Length: 312
Image (cartoon, rainbow, N blue to C red; front, side):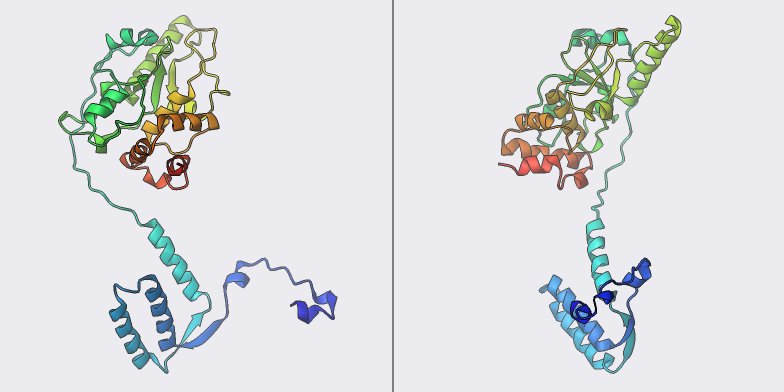
């Protein structure tokens, strides 16, 4: 184009093309069938040169013998589109895993009330089977996650973790998502609740607000909300009317996200906290198993967690 317009600068500008058809709808051409098939076979041989090479050679010889002399109409983009489609189909392949059907466990009812969350000793008197996350991982899972520094500030209720009626079955494949949580008022940790327990607590707090004829801030939090902000910017309402600022520490949020199977972290400070939780290769290898348990392994590639585990 430069050479053609060198002597006539007025022809440098090309007409604007707005229709996709002009970009992608190339001219149809007539080509020999044997040549078209041979081109496709060569591309397959480049992808897999060992497994089916004899069969591909045999097909190529037959195509050359019977297809030569037969003309077909093809597009210049046909081969490229087929190769792109082939790559997309390979990327979209998913592994199907059959999980045995199990009988779900009915939740144990207990009076979930706001005043119970002053400290862990008060809560343990009412909440059935309250356990530390580290204890559950050490005793109830077959997947080894014990090397990770889980700490002693995250608690789970029985209703959240034990989702099956048969308590002898290991629950690696039957983990419930943890969405609802409450921060203990003495700051000693957080308690993860089942959805039904969270609904019960919220209903109790709404009844209190109705009786007092004024709004009483809830102590119930949602994981997505508390993890969406760094500790420097997060303002959470306390259970008192003074609306004091509550901060969930980055190391606590990092452990919560790790157990939930999250792979992206909000702030540099949380990423630093994650490095402290996973100091060596052993802990980082175990951390990569959690998204697999949560069926979230598709989010690992290119994530903060993957980058952290690849670093020395």
